[in-house]
Image (cartoon, rainbow, N blue to C red; front, top):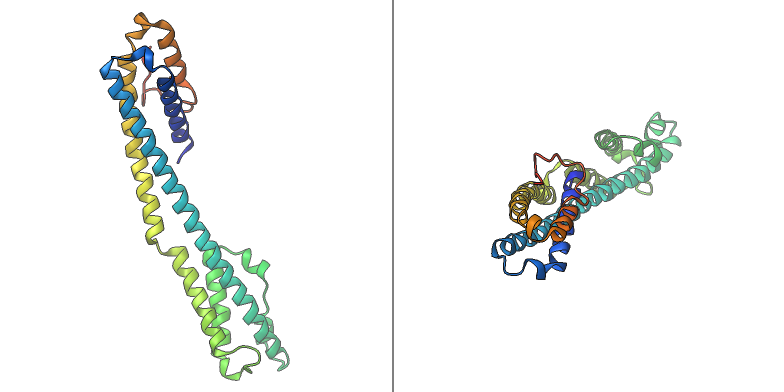
Length: 223
């Protein structure tokens, strides 16, 4: 949710509190009551969509982080173990396979995946020459699985991202409904400028509270 949307939602919640506290003063005004009910429903829907968007985004980010961490950990473990084996053989592969977490963590996701895959290929191509006391075929399989898993989590859209994107689109639609509802409330509340100036003045204050960064031609407030 954007800052503008957050401000808009906070303003709507302030209005909801205002109308709840002032029910006696507009009792019997059915058009106002209907719009307030609509406002309350929209606010509830927005809260639900924000929760979905936040949860899905966080979960997806967490999955990527976990997958990246496993890929890096296995790469550092098995590449360096193989490097130690080849060091005793005076092989140039030892230097090529020596790496560290800090080195890989400094790479972008794409770069890290390519780098880890390259080290895996070097070890896998020479697995027949490696003593199983250093790196086994089973361990290289785990290593490759971790690389492929990170690749899937980082670049496959997946259900979580789709759900989050849907929530984002639904938020836009719901905020559009909020704008229309507020416009109608502005018109309906105008009569209280005459009938109950105090109520109308407090409405205008609540209407503007936290309504920051919004162009008034989007959700105009009538004076």
